[in-house]
Image (cartoon, rainbow over all chains, first blue to last red; front, side, top):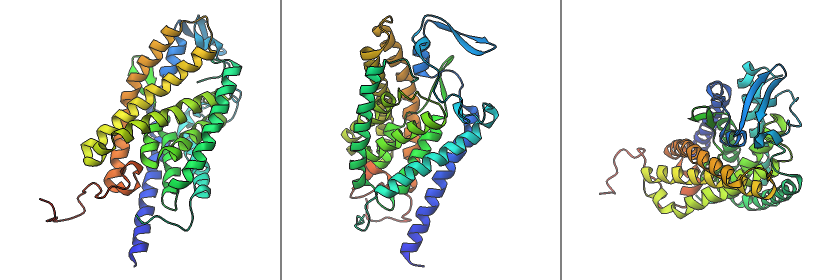
Length: 121
Length: 229
């Protein structure tokens, strides 16, 4: 086997491993993510209290987040990393997201890449 | 950030900034993309997407997550890195209803443009240290990622100052946003150091910041190396 083939195989192995790590993070570790509001949300929620109502969460008080509108795509099937609003499928949503990102980004980068004149490193 | 926090004109301005920035990044990215780095860059984007899902606790009741600008720029260069983070934000907004649509430009400006510039700028300033040895590389990753997070959050403060609800004190908003993002920056720094460290230990040739090193990090591959004292 030529060194070229061996080198490509090793690179392919590394890429496969990297992809698996991303899939495991999004598909499994995501269940352990902290569900508290993140830094920016916390800052914009200052002054408000989040009250659970039948219609969902409501903000009581005076805070910046009260200006925030609902997301225009809040009804989309994968909204908030669920599947049809079901949080038990966060991992599925995550895997779909990883694959979608890989497809879009990988596709764009593959099209943009320089062809032929490979660098000698 | 969600829609509605920044008014429409300012959102539109940052939408234009984001489009211009992404176009510039596309032009610059060609130089750094070849048959090897293009798939690597796609995977970096996917990894940033995955890791952004992992909110970690920073205070009781408050979480943070990776932004990824320094991570991506250190691994695949600033132009490609900006595109990676930008694509992640677009996928999040369009597919997962995470991050407002009118706020997308501001979000891209903060995390993909400002964050990448700040993080990569720090990494380049400290490049000699990063290339010296493994602790040096990890330290540079940590600092670059910390700065990336804090400066990116400064982008939100700028946008809020220009187009936010004037009923709220800018100083108070700035104080809590910066304070919380200093804490998030620590997590960002740890994740970035861990990830880049892992890639560098198996494929240092795929770490953009280390490229062009005359002698890459010496790694266990040579059983006996008499060439060095």
